[in-house]
Image 1 (cartoon, rainbow, N blue to C red):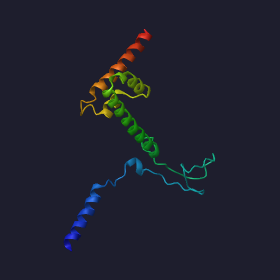
Image 2: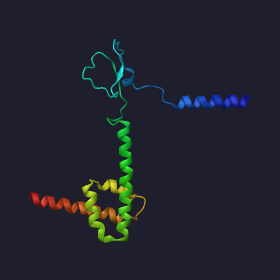
Image 3: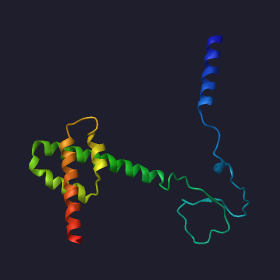
Image 4: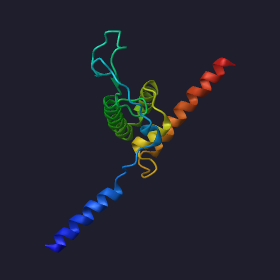
Length: 150
């Protein structure tokens, strides 16, 4: 009986110690404002133009990106990674399609560091040749653009 009590006290104490219960100083400086009108959220979907009578609650946003937008970005990132890996495997089977794939990746705005990350070129050398080929393709495009400007 005492052992279970001691263990539960240790677990609760550990949880309390591990949690960050202290708020940042910027978060603690929230002013209190009285309102005669109703309290509405900014994301309530009501935009009547005159909201001066009520108090607005803050919508939770992190780094100017709402959580739903963040989920879309993560999903898009996963799909892009899968498509790049699939295209890289196709290039390994048929190297003649490399130029077309590089053109497509450039059209989608993929940078070399993203391609390296998605193909895990730092861990495996399997796709290193494809990564280097894409870097060379981008270099050639940049070189042609500079020649046009000269």
